[in-house]
Image (cartoon, rainbow, N blue to C red; front, side, top):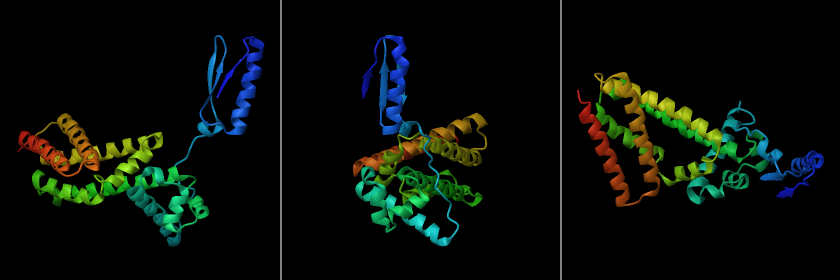
Length: 254
């Protein structure tokens, strides 16, 4: 919506206040541009400026509540896999989970909070799995055998499947998710650095740090490509990723 203000300076403040009041009371989406000869002011509606929380309304204290939240989260994941990100709404989640819309709002203020909780659980699953895979017993397998186990384990988590792609689509435009991912990346890179330090004890710390960031970047790229590739395309992605790993193993071999 555009409003052209009169040129007279004394009218500027009056018209700005009128339009701002309308935007706030009407809940106007988008931007209201206020133009004068020398001044352009961008005003966001209350809906746009209000800080959105991604936290649950309340943490479950009883087993029944925890089961309800799990049903909501599982239904959301199921919808992403069967119908895609655009199909995820509070009503569709309610229909799929068997939890009423009212009950969902007792735990989550909006669907973005549900997606945020789902993503948090997915990332926690990755972190916990990697922690298990970097135990001393697993490290003793050596880089080649360890990587085979790593690939097999993470395939089961589904990060290279279409459902994860739809979850990424649903979350990619939000700063809250970006912050969550950045914290996760740092945590995983630190864990991988510890792993490579054990695999390649003669490498210096800077090399280990960059190696962890680089190879984890390759892992994320592989997962993204596998979400969309099929048939021979998937085979090529897998083989190229393995070739890159072999190059590093040969370079840093004890």
